[in-house]
Length: 72
Image 1 (tube, one colour):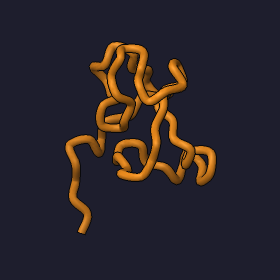
Image 2 (cartoon, helix red, strand yellow):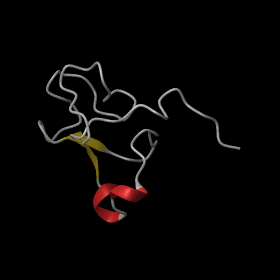
Image 3 (tube, helix red, strand yellow):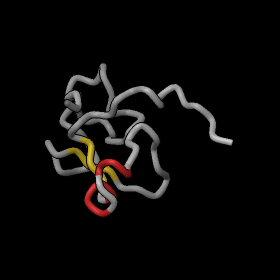
C-alpha cells in the first residue's frame, strides 16, 4: 500500500538534481518523493546547500523557498 504524502502534488524546483535524472531519465524520477539513498544538488551552487543556505532535498525545494524556480 502506498501512502499519499502532503508533498505528492507539490512540484520540486527545476534546479534540484540527482544522478538518477541522468541514468533513468526525468520521466522515471519522481522528485516529489524524497529518497533515502539519493544525493541531491542545486544547479545554482552545485552543492547540497542551495543559494539560500538551506539543504537541497525534494521536501525542501518547493514553492515558498526564495530560490525556487518552477518547472515549466
